[in-house]
Amino acid sequence: MAKLATLRGLIQELRYAVPNATLKDNLAFQYIMKQYRKYNTTDQQLCKAQEEMNYIANTYLCYLRSSRLSQEIHDEFHGKGERTVQETAQMVGFKLPHDPK
Amino acid sequence: MLNSFTKIFNKSLNLPCTPLKLARNFATPTRFYKNTSILKSEGKYEITLDQRKLKTPNGTPFYVENEPLALAVASEWNAQKNKIIQSKMHITTLCNTVLDNPNKLTKLDIVNYIVNYLDTDTILYQANEDEDLMKFQMAEWDPVIEWFNKRFNVKLKKSIQMDVSPISEEDKTIITKHLMSHNFATVNGFMYGVDTLKSVILTLAATEKFLTPEKAVLLSRLEEEYQSGRWGRVEWAHDLNQLELQTRFSSVILFVYYNSQSYMVREKNILG
Image (cartoon, rainbow over all chains, first blue to last red; front, side, top):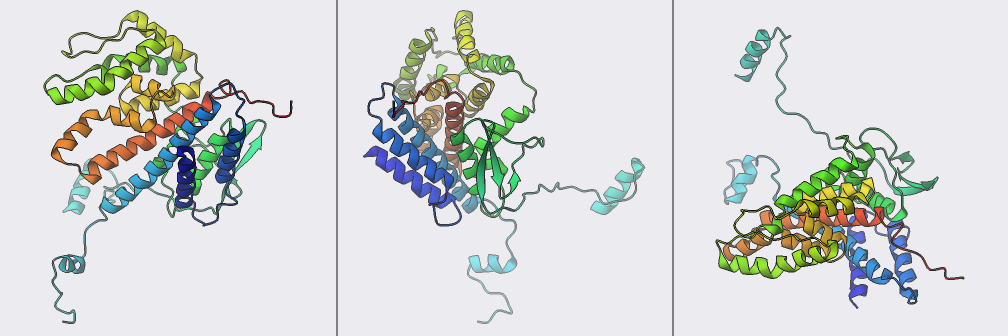
């Protein structure tokens, strides 16, 4: 179940990251799906490949999610320069002399 | 006022009288491409932005040696909205650093840097002023040190008094040997990870999959976490710091993994 959650998370993050809505033609999406299908079927593998893929998938999810969220915080709090007189007035609930009452 | 200052300043240097330019304009290019894709040629993967090929800052063609890394780079470029913000594209940056090698470092230089960093490794120095914090550190950091000692067959000891250097020369030789067995790109990744977490032990523990990147970042900022649990958490400082470290560090893990993967994963022949 945890693996499915990771895959869902990855797809969700790709949706956020990719500007146009369709993921079908997205190469990264196709690659991830291919890997998931491949490692789903090789249960005879002696090495820890499946576990390893899960670790890497989670790492990529962490990468995508953290970079999106940090960008969001940055956008919210980063200074956008000085406010105009009108914006400042609005903040404290005043109106400028020429504004309608 | 500024203008008169400029005049005087320029006169003293015998320069023509132009206004002194105070602020440098850092150009952030707008996105000029629609699609990103990858190209495979001669076993190397290149990135294309529409028809153009991606280049490194030095102007040489950009390439990586395996598909998933190329796709991750292409996705990074695809994820840019209106402006291309290169400082947030960590996987691209790592690949660029390896290709251009701007500081002209050799593998040995980097390995020496990392091994010397062990002397000041974050998790080897535990604070003894605050008992609660100390308990946390012992519970969280000690198992990682123990794992490290076992994995590399070394004898690192934590220090509470800041009196002794916890690393012996033999141990340094062992770690040097281990690091030298990786390729140049991987070692570059290690360096970036060490600079991010301020800890060689945590970096190696995560690249060996003993810790997840989230956990490694959490352990590296254990004291910050402890203090903010006590005094309150501020989104634009603590959360931002945590997320940025996570972004950096997970990019390191991916980069290291895909650069050292070729001899780690053997595919099973399904038909055979």
